Length: 85
Image (cartoon, rainbow, N blue to C red; front, side, top):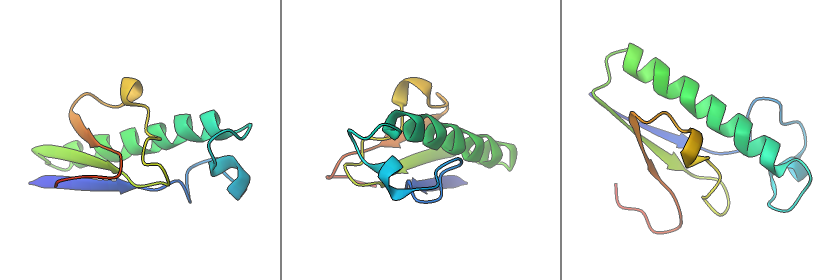
C-alpha cells in the first residue's frame, strides 16, 4: 500500500494564529518545525500500519514548508508549485 500525506499548515500542532503561518513572520520557523514533526508522526503511523511507501505533499502557500533535513528518510517529499504524483 502507498500512502499520500498532504500537509497544510492550518491545524499544525501549537499554531493558534494565522500570522504564524506566513513566511517572514516571527513564528514561521516554529510552524515549520511543528509541521515537520506532525508529518513525521503521520509517516511513522503509516509505516506502522503497513504502508510500503509514503509520499508527502507540502501543500501550504509556497509549498516549501516541510523541513526536508528533518523529514523521516523513509518518505518521499514533493514540494513547490509543479508536482507530478
